[in-house]
Image 1 (cartoon, rainbow, N blue to C red):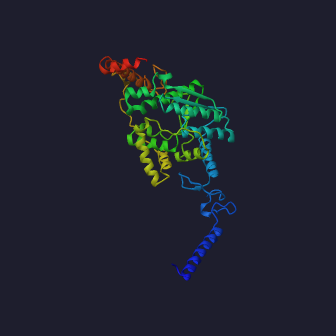
Image 2: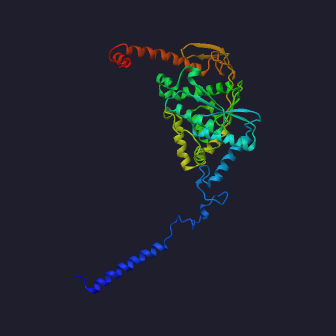
Image 3: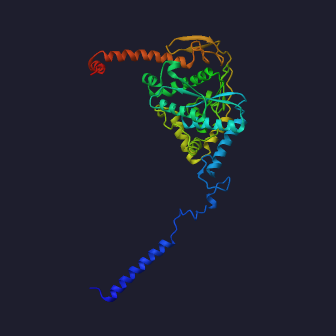
Length: 398
């Protein structure tokens, strides 16, 4: 048994502990108490307005800014790019290449906003291309259609199937995934021009950002593509003889900032990457550039400025230039023609081409030959054995 003294000491200790707990509960004030808001340190304030708490570091210059200042700086930089390069003319109709991704969605939103704020006087139309990629393009086009309603802008959709009688899924099945971006790039550029021509619009605006421009410069250097290197950073491009020009208002806008803008503005966009994109060579240049950006954030703008100031050595004039230009077709035949002039028209489709037959028609000719071989092989496989039995069972109904 406990003695009277031990029992007294034990009871006294319990009372002291309970009293201490009560005192602590009375003195404790939670940090979320609305009566006593937490004070913001000077080092946490926005470096532009010095009034609100900074919520991010700008990927471009690592500047600490608040959400409101970020919106203003981002929109003002794009406005300055438009004005300094004289991209738009009053009364002009422009087609925004809308894919439903972050770049085109932010581009449509910002152009509509700046057009109303600074009175550009342009009419904006959304132009989308349906490449025919099941599980990717059909979902992204649904996003574009929602954007059309949200921004109250007209929408025009042009499909590969309508223009070329091919979808990208059919092309990949016929030509393989390794060449998918080659086909898609050629067909998409032509489809944008044809869609703009259908709408009687002579200016197509695309969402190519600073990351895309820097990647293009790196790709051309890595491939040794000297012919395209000099023009890879042009903000306005237009072929001789073509009534349609293209511009890139996001030329100096970082991809990370575009994503942040879409996130804070709560814009509706489609974020899934194309299922054929991982096989593209551009992914190699993107990985290299991201590694450089982690060390030096300004490297993206530095690469663009390097491309802008790049001048190629003038070509040597040959003593006896050939009078004829030799063109080798996809079927192996050779044709002779006079030296081409930029702005010529394709003999088959009438699209701009530096040769008698444009690149798109050359690719389509190769696909048509491969399609015939593929159909013969499939027919041979289905004409005998287990494949024929499977085909027969599929047609049965119970």
